[in-house]
Amino acid sequence: MLPGSMAMAGCSPDRAAFKMGNGQAAFNVEVVDTFESRAKGLMFRESMARFSGMLFVYDAPKRVSFWMRNTLIPLDMIFMDQTGLVTRVHDNAVPLDETSIFGGDQVFAVFEMNGGMAQKLGIQAGAMMQHPAFNQEIAAWPCKN
Image 1 (cartoon, rainbow, N blue to C red):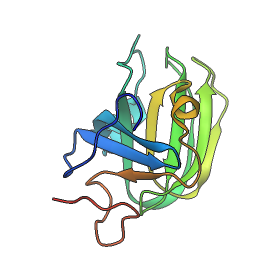
Image 2 (cartoon, rainbow, N blue to C red):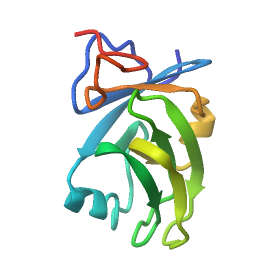
Image 3 (cartoon, rainbow, N blue to C red):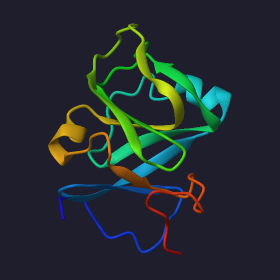
Image 4 (cartoon, rainbow, N blue to C red):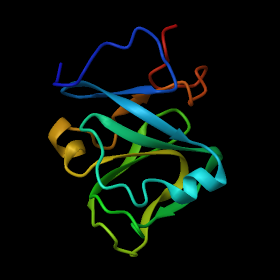
């Protein structure tokens, strides 16, 4: 296991884990699942704890793009489908950059973490997230409650 990792005995909305080829990593999670909370995201925050992040959850898979307007810290963006499977990773989004970052056409959730963490931990397309936001009947890595 990697630093900050732990076996997930169950799931809770404030914790998430990634499983990738070289191990697992767990994060404290802030879930944003309304239009207003997704629009604000991590804007204006000056820092974020190392194993923390924000999970954007949509009502259904959709085409998404992000930008870094008013975002002060570099971020990695992890785009996932409805099962929690990572479909794309955007490394080190540049603070305050308004260039559109395309995530895909069938994105159900996006996890933002500190820039550089995804590469350091080996999180890439094909990794899986475990979190109760995903329908557990189809989840790539279901919770074990």
